[in-house]
Structures are given as structure tokens and as C-alpha cells.
Length: 147
View 1 (cartoon, rainbow, N blue to C red):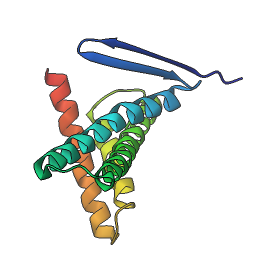
View 2: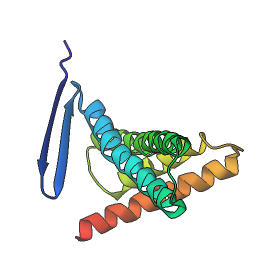
View 3: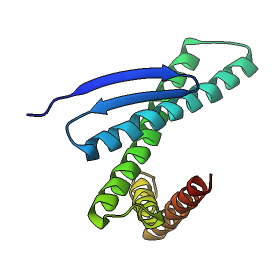
View 4: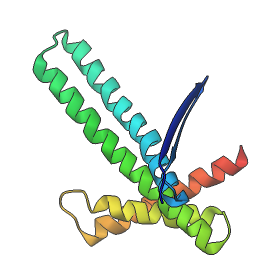
């Protein structure tokens, strides 16, 4: 029987949300989705707020655009993070080791999947996004291990 739990704690400057869905793969994926999705939504809100403040006029249409953009970007960023976390976790468990190769493959798979959501999909764009995703994830892993 699968049990679900939700708890949250706030400690300055750390915000930690724990979601237990009964399987570590789901937990890592949902955790990544929630944390990074929130950052994506906040990013959109800040950008649109700046645009609204520059125009010095607030309309209902502006607020609707802000909410739609925040939702869309939160969903996009969260999906990318959830896929990456799930792929990296799966590789770690199947290979039995946590290293930069998991990050590289996870980033490449995530980049390739992300390219499927863009308009004008081509194999070249997918390969380019996979290489970019793998490079960013690998660089991030190296930097994380240096600090």
C-alpha cells in the first residue's frame, strides 16, 4: 500500500519540502519539480513585475499574463528538473556509483527531451540541446564537488 506524506520546514536561508510518495525515484523527481518549478515561477513573476512597474499602469490583462507566464515557466522549469533528478537517480542506482557520468547522461537525456517541446523540432536541435544539457550538468557536478 502506497502512503503519501507532505511536510515542509523553513529555516533561514534554506527551504526544504519533503514529499514521500512511496518510492525514492518518485520522491527525487517530485522534489526537483517542486523546488525548481517554484524558482521558475518566481523568475517569471519578477520579470513581469518589473515590466509592469516600468509601464506605470496595471491592468487586468497584465495580471492574467503574469499568472499564465508564471504557471507556464514553473511547469517548464519543474519538468526539466524532475526529469533530470529522476534520470540521475536511476543511473546512480543502476550503476551503483554517484559520479559526473550520471550528471552528464542525465543532462543529455533531459536536454533531448526538452527539445521535443520546442516548435520547429529537428534532430540537429535535439542533439545540440542534449550536448548542452550534458555539458551544463557535468560542469555543475564538478563545481559542486569542488566547493
